[in-house]
Amino acid sequence: MSPPVPATSACEAAARHFLARLERPSRLLVAISGGSDSTGLLMALHRAADARHRLFAVTVDHALRPEAASEAAAVAGLCARHGIAHLTLRWDGEKPQTGLSAAARGARYRLLKQAAVHFSADLVLTAHTADDQDETVAMRAMRGGGADDRGMAGMAAAVLYDGAVWIARPFLGLRREEIRDALTAWGVGWIDDPSNVDPHYERVRMRNALAAGTVDVPDAAHAAQGRLERAVAAAGFIDAHVGLHAGVLAHIAPSGLSIDPAILRFALSGLIAALGGRENGPSSQAMDRLVAMIGRGVPDRMTLGRVFAALRRDGLYLVRERRDLPVLIIPAGGEGVWDGRFDLRNRLDGPVTVAAAGEVEVTALAARLSGLPASLVARAAHVLPCVVVPDDDRFVDIRPRIAPYDLFLPLFDLPFASSLARLFGRQVFTAPAVSL
Image (cartoon, rainbow, N blue to C red; front, side, top):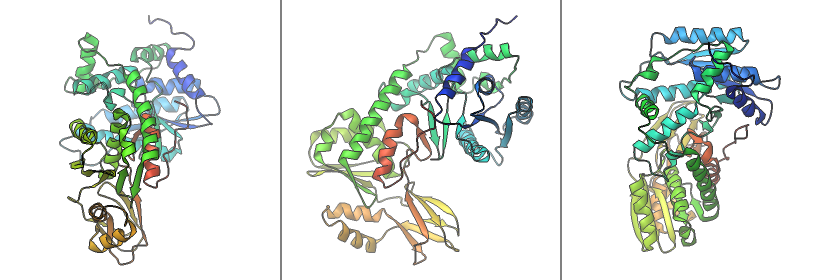
């Protein structure tokens, strides 16, 4: 006989605690695979929610296992029995031969966003647990992440996906065993995915190592607090010390380069990623070289993360390198991303071609930025997007991207991401509708 679970289990208590922090009546979409964690999240929220909040569910069928369709049907049946509206979305199309896990993750998030739009959800909820957090941080540590590495903070309590949907993790403080105890007490079963015990996967091997006590788990909570503090300080640095010209040439005066090196490093890494159109900042070794160059205080230059960095007597300049700049054709009414740095939307009836600017734009920009070093202004002009066809580009919308954060923005980094958005003339990122 299974041991009894208290009237309010740890599982249900976590759900109530999450609901109490919602800032307004909400439409909550739970991602449920049928496994114990996601089933426990849905059932705990169903038991805890009152009339102020509406609950929905979505199952993503990755179409990778024959059993997936029947498992999704079983979840649909569970939801029907409890009066919860449910949607199954399938990842159709050809699957890649390499990088399948990453592709599946990308497809899952795209489909979760689609479901959020379908249900007009305020938040999407996933059932990542403390066990998942331990595995994530331990794997990152094994890959060489140091104590000051951003990855050591583990998974954030929430992440903004594609600038539009906040995905929260209410169970990050719960152990899987607590969830399963609650489900057993409630008489609710779950589905065991065979991939969860397949040692072919790194996560499974790490799970086994943690269970055997052969791997230490870094303190993710301490690292997360440190990451948030650096993000807040780096946001202040961006607001106070960084100027941006023509949307592509950043300048930091000498006074801004003498701050705490850890904060400077954090801020410059994110700024360089944005200027270079990359989701991740430069390598640790490249950042070491940049910080060392700044520390020497002697005029010098280097490239990192597709960005040219020039240290001059009047400060540090950063601008996208003049190489590998793409040509992009956007069909009528279509959208595209140019060089990872600009979102474009074509409102014309015919296609447009976008390429790097030429000498005409160099001359025009030099006249506008006459007080800046001419060589750097020329570099800046050559990395601007230029609509080649048609002659009238007024019907092509161009918006700068914040490449490190426009697709995935962890809650830790929200203050810093919003400071970058202000710098690039963008609206700041919205906070989640829950206090986390």
